[in-house]
Length: 490
Image 1 (cartoon, one colour):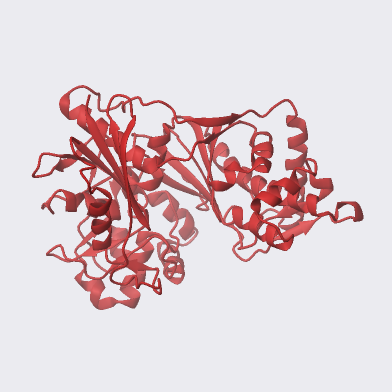
Image 2 (image 1 turned 90 degrees about the horizontal axis):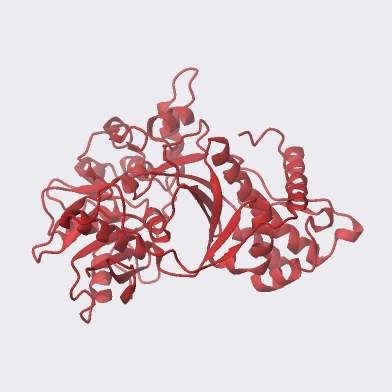
């Protein structure tokens, strides 16, 4: 039996799980919040940046009390879309820019325009170059923002790293070799999952000069060994680690229900979409994770709940008093504009109002169906590119709501799996560590991760009333096309 650890350094805390390499059983767990440092004042006045030393302090606290005793390898998962810009000596030129920094909207638009040529739009050019189009949160956009707003700091930038790269580098004692993995690299905007190569010219486009980029490791590669003899695996971003922790494979998709929504699926090939609806990410197991995002998911439910003077649980109870189709009431949930379809200036629309549909339960039902139909639009983008989806993993607190569980299988047209809440990113990091350790010891192949049991979950089948749900979807689609004709093409 071997013992490995997986640590997940999110935007607010560090979680550590210590696992048996053979069974994946969790032996011990640790947790610590991130202290506020540097740009992140105690009152949270600057949420865009932080001193990454806070991550190390949190890691040390979470690992306290002998948590890592007997551990042979560590895997690292960390928040995505962060940017650490270092100088020639390995010192930060400024605090780390974190994933939720949205100040780069103008910089993103400039980058898109800069890559366009006559007869060939910038969005298509970016999608073909790196499988994604610059958005405010992306590291490539953060670079452009830095060059525009802090030119002195930008001129000193010599090395670029993501949060999990930096943590791995710190654990290894800051060696001359710097590494990343396919998953983390694919989210930067300067590495292509399709070609498996960097585009340093895009770094120069954003920053004004080129910078050193980490070596991209394979899924089962080790980044190195600590002076104490601990093997450190490649590490990856939280999304890729969670997919590995869930044990996803081809035919599996994940629908995440946050304020906004995301849909991703495991696919054997890198995908892109001319308008940038797909973000082409690599996973942590040697395949790919095409992602489609929506701007509105649970925020549509919360808005409706507030309107009706209830909470999400009460909204779910109300919705179940109505019937599929909500008596003709349709909510287009574009409360914050929308990304899928690309309608950044759109507003939400409630249609089908009749005297008999103007009841709280029908509005509640319409909010759930509108949210889920918006996510079906995102699933359709993937399906239109040949992605097979046999089952959908539904994540987020709203996945536990009975109204979601009642409607999602029929609207998605697949089996729906609601996993038991767990630290899936940390579990994925531990599984990656077990894989790298097994390869190093000669007990595992480099192309096959260790087989760990599937997570405990509730499973919901579409049932025999698919025609009813198809009618609900058609009602939604007809309304969307009436309000925004031609906006959604797959």
